[in-house]
Image (cartoon, rainbow, N blue to C red; front, side, top):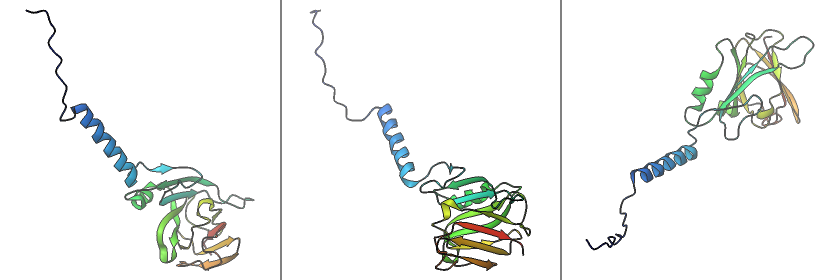
Length: 182
């Protein structure tokens, strides 16, 4: 033996290691998932999340000497099947009162409004739609509700039954909603 260390061989890597391939694949999947909007549902008790498409709002009945129903919960979903997930997210004990739509003739994204204390009666439910003040264009009433009253900065309107268009005065400008059985 000569006592010399063997010459170092130059390292030529033609294919990435398994660990590098795994990291690259993981980064690609995470990036694609984020870009496509495939994410876990986002939820908040008070405000619609940016990019949220379909929401569920649950109200308590209007209490005596109180003007508005308390918002019990609010959850919004985005991404694939957001509407289906919103529909399935409503509490079983709640009654759907309204379906709000972003566009006329019930098009666009939705907010499903539920009453936790049962169907509409003469007292009904009412509240300030903070996140939908600039979005509400049409709505459907259900759950025993037959009448609705909406107001906003440009005026107000009273409706009976389904409303495929709230009109120019209230379109995207609703600051108060009341529904009841008349």
